[in-house]
Image (cartoon, rainbow, N blue to C red; front, side, top):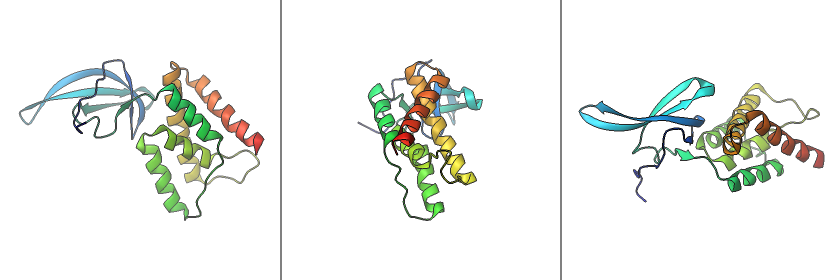
Length: 171
């Protein structure tokens, strides 16, 4: 498969853009840039009130993908149930790794961040930056779970929360 393979997305399809999470293609438009016709996916991130234009021939290269399959969602939920793996590295290095995982667009990697940074009420406090990373990962995970299930974010948040709580109860 060539890197510049065109992705087969249509308007109204939900996609995952690595650095921003779940968005919806609102149109495919052509723009002239430096004398060349360029075909672009216009992707709306409603929650963030943001619109991106992604060249259709670069979408694969930058990691834009369709929503995860239900199997991948189940795998992500299993990942959440696992035991947190916290490396002994300095926080700055771990934070960098967490951020890379969140921005990879890989749902399993994002679930790992949620799992590793999740705290129950009786555990030690999180630092501000831990909380930021945790919430960013949680939001990405929840939005994709919701989009795959048909769009109910509250239900998806509940589902993710239940998995995290069941893990805490088992600990």
